[in-house]
Image (cartoon, helix red, strand yellow):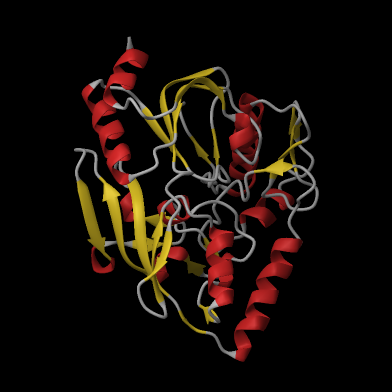
Length: 297
């Protein structure tokens, strides 16, 4: 039995069965994890990952849950949370080593305390560093990857690897480290001393975030912006605002947000996403690409 083998491989690790996943995702949808674990060290993560490889067991990595959803029902395999990989240490006055589970708002707090800047575009973005790197999260033409010096990963062969920034390709909502099945462990990032203009830049990003819906659970922007277009405007122009499936509804405030009005299921969200993609494609010939990641389909 897989549970018994897990206990043998990691006797000191708390392993939860049938763990509800909806409270761990900001859209508040999804079923239960067959097994859920939150390693507290790189070594525990490495042992767990190698165990999953040896047992041919599916694994899903969960950070802050702000841009992912899980399907309804039981998600077979192991959901690995990075919540306990959350250390932050300054190497120099402007360079820090940060674990993948460290939350972006807390990085912003560290920068404010040291009068540093360079990450204003991330103001108001939830989630953890690992997930942000995987999708090169950002705004206003900037992304988290531009601040990286190097990234440490757990590779699909179970080995630890260090990636210098010149070995990493990134662009809008894309990072080459997401091309294969790997887990981001930590990153080294360099910031800069702040200047008087940074406060205005930060306030502009916060104002932009303030215009987005917050009254209901959501997973941030549902779709990526196609080159030269705004996904929100395309959805709005094609009549997607207020479309709903069950308790999943396209926000009237911002068409690129799907909200959970209370009891939406993951299947409702996925169906609504497909309806929106089809409506935009039928009207414009543009096929929207999801920004939300659907794990365990």
